[in-house]
Length: 163
Image (cartoon, rainbow, N blue to C red; front, side):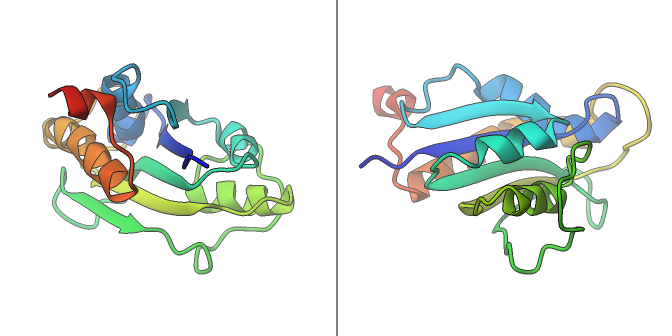
């Protein structure tokens, strides 16, 4: 059996650096990550992500903006602890907060797969389109990080094999 991996970019492109996940996915989709790797830009469609997670996945790679608690543009890569994520239990149709997505998934009877987060510290999440300079500079680093995470998960990318 092959390991199916979902790479999900999330965030709101109309809130500055919150659009980090969708911007990274713009550089990932169509790059030949492997037949069992499914890159998707979910934007703010949390319910869609929750329903897609009802399928059988070996792992989820979640690409998202992180609260500004450090230097803008800094990437953090970590495994999510689903047990400590706090969100109101139940269906959350209009939220893209990862905790709300996992709570919705649970309410639908699903279980979250191993989840690796590739997150970027934001500088500005005010209304407006476009990433700050620091966060935009982190986009190619995040794309490379996705390839590294996939390799750690045992996926050999056809694009990597050719290069």
